[in-house]
Image 1 (cartoon, rainbow, N blue to C red):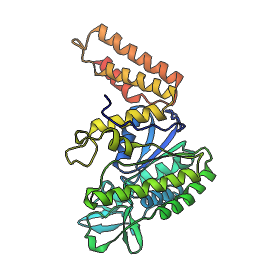
Image 2: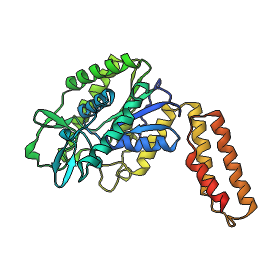
Image 3: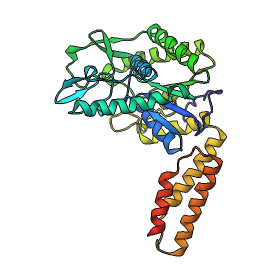
Image 4: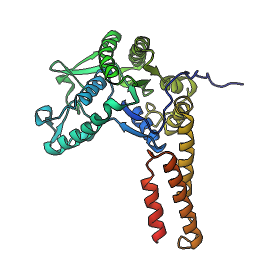
Length: 327
């Protein structure tokens, strides 16, 4: 008997390798996937503005990255004893304006240095609801009173028009660029279940139209559908019944690996996992010659991988080996 409704995985998505320049932006689901890509020896830039939820904040952030914007104190505001940017997550906030600006500009400049060399841009939309203040959409309200904002819902056409302009410029500058969209499976229950579904529907319809407009560059991976259809059970949610559980994130990741990673990338993932499993082994006699030979074999394996794939970063693993060899 079949106790689930399988989600058909799309074909023809870009096949990623660890040598690719990747930028992930959007909801905390993008952060989760980015962390797993980093564990797999990719070099992703993950949410240089912090978590972003709505499409127009993501596009505004991308434009600032492409332009190499430098933030000044005029871009910040002071609230509850901290300086904040309305474009950034609270992780960038600080009691010191100088420190907040240093955090913001360091991340922004690093992202700017890579933006026009990207192989793939992975974008995760969370909601079509936005908050406006003095006519501008804010990415984060920083717990200010709702009365200082106007809340409204984006239309499909508004999103499509904005991204058509954005992608036209990015692709003209970087014709190899591929974009993989996902919609976050995190439910915005505060809006109510029906309103949440309508919000997600707007995002899905907008992405579908962008795929049609840029068929060689824009793709969709069904993370949202995998959680809602294949994992249709509350045991796959965290305690808040809203966010995916670690098990669910891992399940979606495994489907992403099947769909979007090249054969070389899969081989590197396996070799990296083997190295980390070996390093997690606790020897009975860490000072013994036998264990030192074991560590030496790990270093040789890393060197062979680096010779074949010079873009891989095993610096941390090599340092662990060298420290243990000196003990």
